[in-house]
Amino acid sequence: MTTWACSLWETAPETIREIVNQFLDSSIPEIFAVFFAIVYLVLAVREDIRCWYAALASTSIFLIIFWDVTLYMESGLQIYYLLMAVYGWYQWRGGDKAGTQALSISRWSIRTHLVSIGTVIVISGISGYLLSINTNASLPFLDSFTTWASVLTTYMVTKKIYENWAYWLVIDAVSIYLYLDRALYFTALLFVIYIIIIGFGWRSWSKKLATQSTHA
Image 1 (cartoon, one colour):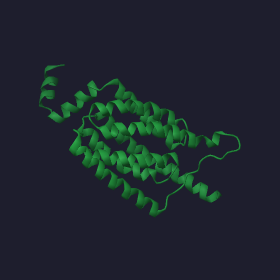
Image 2: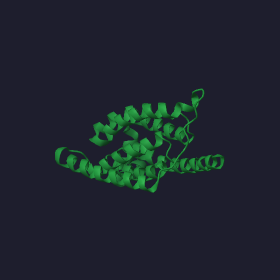
Image 3: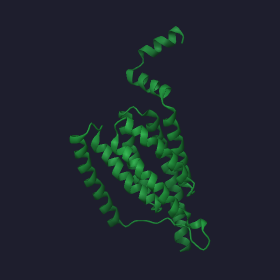
Image 4: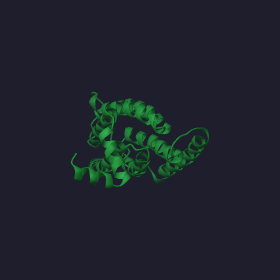
């Protein structure tokens, strides 16, 4: 590195230097986890059943990564994701079987949404409190919220509930802060990309839902 470059680097804010170093030193597993996670969401937008194979690969890696940085709820969530990847594949494969109809996009009632959101908030408060007094968990309440909200929303994806995109938008925005706090910069970047892809997913599923309604 040249003298002027070294000088510029030394005068850069500490946060910027930390981020650059994290990118340079990021583990290969985290990079692969991010890659498979992006593949999963892109395929989910297209309602491609192969998204569940990518989900299996990504969550297997993230399970270990989150445990290492003491995000215990996020780590435990990956076990649920593994089970949901299998369940989601089973639900979506109907269209590949002779004599069966592919799972269609559907919507939940306002009452169902209110009950679901209320349940997530209550459970998040309880688990966040328990983590704060019994473990060294980082940001226990936010960790709990993103975990339980993701449990609900992943189930919505397996059932092709249209509103899952709105739920993911909130979850991913909170998750970005969570991962930046734990210096998981590649993972935080993943969730920024997620938010962009969510916009495309929301639009794509809106068109398909409208088409379904027209042919109903």
